Length: 266
Image 1 (cartoon, helix red, strand yellow):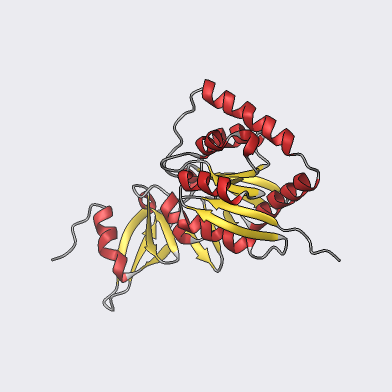
Image 2 (cartoon, helix red, strand yellow):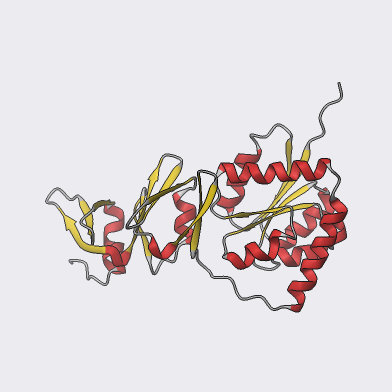
């Protein structure tokens, strides 16, 4: 029996954590072969032209060349299947939903990733590449003719998949985030949402003027802190506006004081 042909994948993303997340997920798939990674758009163009992958996970916003510019440089007629990866708002989702095989909105969970792969497998087996190229050319014309708004630097909302639906949680509602094994809990005033994401990735994508990582397992909205607490034994914590107490690492306490505009004791 002939060996099943594997789907050859190239990952193009300027964030190391994002590349590693995709690699971890893809390595679990028996019909996937990761042929390379690229850390920016220019490397992505070179990788597509040299490696001829069947599928590219392509970050939308990168320094140098954006995901859109990568497609322009390679040419829609020469592009493999594309799953756009974006941490930005609904603009990106609307712009690329009909142009690519699929999109992943960062941070995404395992189930959403599997849905994207299923769409790719279906399209490759059905030989729909010509249709994809036509749609990519169409979106490039639209984007070229219509200036796009600059995407926000930090997350404005986080997609949470639950019970067959995708809930959008505005970052402005999050009071604090707590690590829970391989997951992160987003705590708002009225609910807790669970996503599969690393705390470092969330810390990097949240506005540091608004959020601070007080502990390796906790990120808190600064304006929600009501008081800094400490004991004679040298243990530190914060009390939030709702009365909840959260532990603060000793190594982060002085920086937290500075972030809150409090002069540390000499």
